[in-house]
Length: 119
Image (cartoon, rainbow, N blue to C red; front, side, top):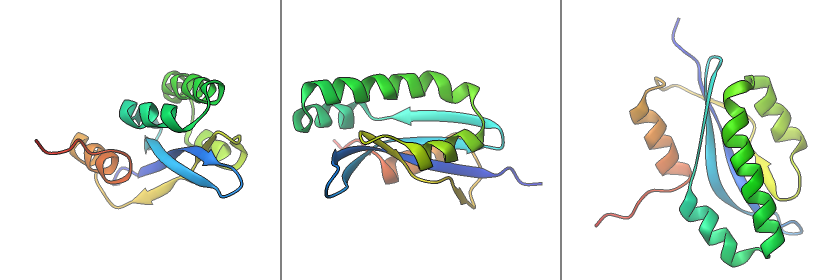
């Protein structure tokens, strides 16, 4: 059986009224293994847009997520997508027809979150 590769995008909400948001990270799910990666550059950009306390709170959430994802189940990611607060938002888990390889993790991150500019 082919491994099931799923992902959820993580967004920082810029304006609750207009639902403006900026993708800051991605959660990868490979069967029961969960990985999380976020962009420090995008978090720094949010610092320029959000007020200090909002950015500080969002940063703590991201760091906690980085630590807790390894201990959770895929159903927890869907829970986060349904019940996230007004500073962070999670997309529902999406299944893609790709092998869960480091190359595909990188492609997904660069496509939806952040790609370093070419020099």
